[in-house]
Image (tube, rainbow, N blue to C red; front, side, top):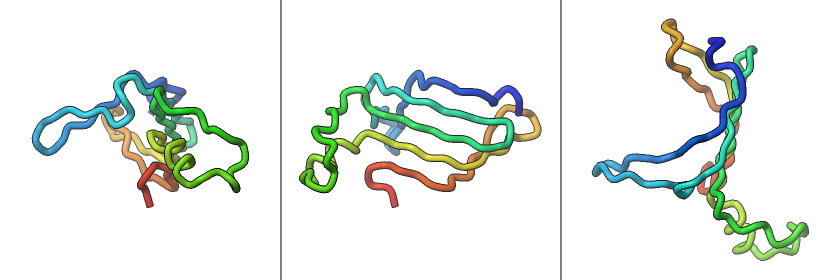
Length: 103
């Protein structure tokens, strides 16, 4: 477990579609952080670097489309993790997530 403990900077993020195509849901240069602590808790934040800055600090009066654009391309979640007996694979249990389109 100790080899996982710490804060890890995201280097890249890609997904493979069912037909074998590689896609970049956070763009080709995302930024992110993954944190594992010694008590078995973890958190992740991933964001597109080409996102527009949120145009206002007034959430209540900001049009829904501007809020949607501001949060697309961002994901965050936290939970717990366990490392397998060989110490090579971490299995996550997600407690709460924030991602565009998530429930």
